[in-house]
Length: 375
Image: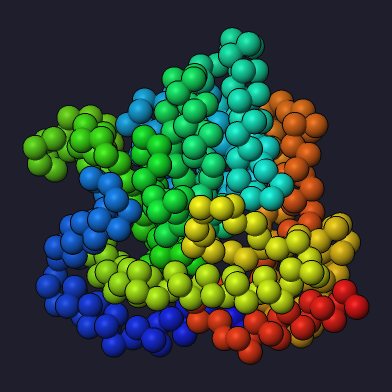
């Protein structure tokens, strides 16, 4: 059994992907080929925004937006404590200070109430300038943007949506990637929409921001790549990855999103009376980058994981170490009482195999193994 079955996905899409890759190679447009522009158009249409700017990976997508917004030393960026390292890393990389915010125990996403407390604390201390809120659409579920937007408006802050895991999710029909002032996603192979290497994209309705990002991602180019008007970076999505993503985006829209929600429903029907299962608030739609259950303790989680491993069932722990406990952020001072939920989740969450090609027989095997453990 595969945790994220990219082999079956490739076998299903092999003919189309092979043709698309060969066409890209035969064209000899390996960087900036027509497939890149076409993919950007398809992605912006799917998300429902004016502009999609592709780039080298999801981490650089975040960093590019912070660069464009001139986020720098002395600025504060508010990031959930329960997420992958890159979300906080890009803040420090641009010279600013990440302020970690505890999460909601049910959705695992940034807790708006605690966000407001964190902002007020930074304002009261007067050492940093609050500038950006960076919610993460964790495990496929969009963050609570209605409340976060109210807070951003109150304090005049920008919102950068980190939708690396949330691409395809939605709130009342509005797609992940369309919230806030800008949004990003990742095409890392295991993401809801992944390529066969690294890749990322930025989404925005702001014309000026889009133009600036187009410049920054190619060495700060002006009218052409040899007219450099600012200091930028080299962050481009290559043509072969774009060709692969065009094929996979079609499958993603046509059936993969429906299928991961089928898997979610099946898992939950089996397990809802056994362990706490994922919570999807009313009006929300998840793209299920992960299906994550909760146990009562670290010991129970580790024993369950070992039990499943013995039966050939792969699992993962996202995330075993909160952001505020990462060594790279040890120079920052934190109060452990501010992160009670995240600390608990890091000891108790367990992600089960989750992908569009998971069969009902495989789901039943996983669920029966979990029920057997708890008996």
